[in-house]
Length: 269
Image (cartoon, rainbow, N blue to C red):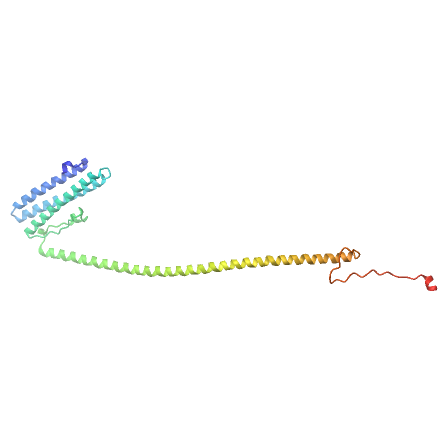
């Protein structure tokens, strides 16, 4: 299948190195089956573990290169490359399971830090791998108890974080409810204010109309008064003018008095 794959030179080089390591692992496990000395078996297992670490690193590098070139490849090529990667991961998992079998047959326990299910592992796993054959039973028990204590502490911290998160969420919910009620009251008050403004506007318009009407009446009365005063003045100045009628309620002007005098001769008679 690998010979039919369309790969770049970089991918071909990585793929070839992976296949070389797989062949070395196959030969190493065949030799391991023939070794009877437990110490030599343990040493051989350490060498095979190093090969598996290298295979894991190369598979990761193969995956990164494949993703970098994914856009430039046809979908069928990408599918073939992904299938090849999954096949290599499964093959590596089979060697990991085979190593566990040999470890069990030797009566040793290894602190397994590999996680081949998704093709990835803890970043510090390779640095923390310890061979169980070099540790006593007491050391293994102490290491297990220490790991369990650290796990319990982590769980307790997680519980505290969850409790704090729930508390913060409850407080936030109460605050949001109070703000929602306050917003509802503000909306009601705004509606009341808007209604009051509308009524005030109508009242101002009504008052404006009444003021305008009053002004017109006052102007009309002022004109009447001015006319009456003008007539009175004209009557006083020119009382003989018959074209102007007497103002109702106003006495007509008194006739001019004529002084009568008698001649002296009239008195003598």
